[in-house]
Image (cartoon, rainbow, N blue to C red):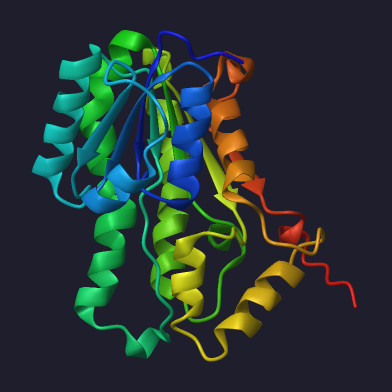
Length: 254
């Protein structure tokens, strides 16, 4: 699998799945643009590479103008975009009647509106390159989650958006696919666990819900993302790929 000569733009790239995905694409020869609103995190964790192959972009995908400016910066540096990975996301645990309006809207602004802003801004470039879009949703979009209604609803919207855009962009030869990770050992998972009683117990429970009895690594999710973006997946579009260690089967071993 090679991405030599290709430009990949990844959101939420300062840490976790986004950072692992950026590192993997860079290792596969791509020019990689890492986008995150955390400028310090971007600079601290950027994969090795030259200015000709690595670009760091600070932007908040929830703000449409910032998303558009970020895409313009990538095109200005690299000349186009071949792959867009929509990974930026936030999550915190609440019962439904505990959410404030601002909290509910914040989750949708990043997870859903941010994805819309990035795809809309990158679409002309993706049409020129006949590129690929990979959207990072969640296993919870398929099975639900206790005390996470806003996150689940936002990630469910991304599953539906994937299917709609696969249909809409087919005539442009743009493939659109989605990965649905389960429990992945990332800063996002740990920050979510810290909003609940007994965070370490929550993390153990996350590991035990998988048939493989462990958390996924960010690299394992990155592997699925790079596959869906690659020529090896050239006849795959509109797919919703669970990368969840068997958790959606609903089976629990004693």
